[in-house]
Length: 175
Image (cartoon, rainbow, N blue to C red):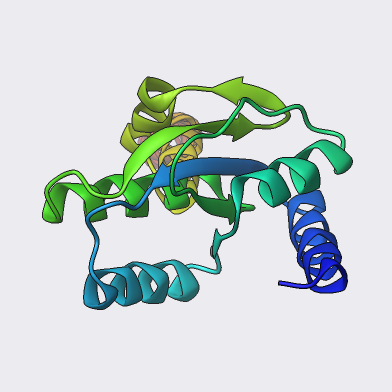
C-alpha cells in the first residue's frame, strides 16, 4: 500500500473516531469470510462501524484523534460506535454464537481505556430504549398515585356535597 493511501485510511478512521463514544478492539482470528460478512452486516444495521486495518495505522489514527491507546498485537478489528451498549451487545452475542470469535482485546470508552470484562458489563446493560421505558414507568407510577390521591379528594368532596344536599333537603322537608 502506498504512503498516500495509508495516510488517507488514517484520516478516514480519525474522522470516524471523533464522533464515536466507544472503540473496541477485537481479534477476528478464526472467523471465515461468511462469518465476518455476517458480523459486518449486523454492525451496519445498528449503525456501527467495523474496520480492519493494520495495527500501526489504527494506533496512529487513535492517537491523532486525542485518545491514548494500548499496544495492539495480532489481527485487529476496530468497532467504532456512538452507542456503546448496542455495539457491545452485538459483539458479545455474535461471539457466543461463533465459538467466542471475535474475541475482545479491550478498547476505549469515553476516552478511557477499558478491558474485556468492562465490555462484557456494557453488553449486560439494558439498551437505551429499555432504560427510557424503565424511566417512563418509574415516572408514571408516582404520577398515577398523585392522580389517584386527587381522585380520592374529589370523591370525598362530592360525597360531602351530597351529604349536605341530603341534610338540607331533610331540613327543608321537616319545616
